[in-house]
Length: 116
Image 1 (cartoon, rainbow, N blue to C red):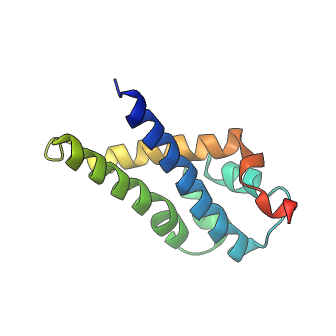
Image 2 (image 1 turned 135 degrees about the vertical axis):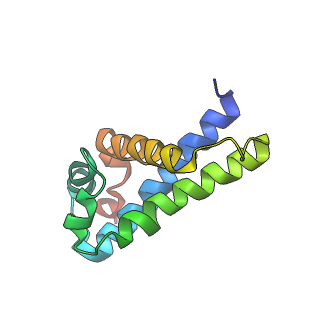
């Protein structure tokens, strides 16, 4: 089980992933009140749904989501000394699914342009 600081770091990474994804979504689709819900719905069952939403052949999903997750997990594994035993592909997908679920359950945190 992850300790408290690891859980906080993972939560911060989930928020960062969603921030990057929402900035990308706003440039591709325009800033609108329900954008977070739209993005979360597109990626809910399968993250490749983001590819269809953004019409970008997976660039946003890979560079704004999966690459961030993978980097975080590699840094975390290096710090813990278990990089050799970690299945990064599976762990990256798991973290990305957690992040899209968080986006879907906390859309108000990511629709910031409404406040401007």
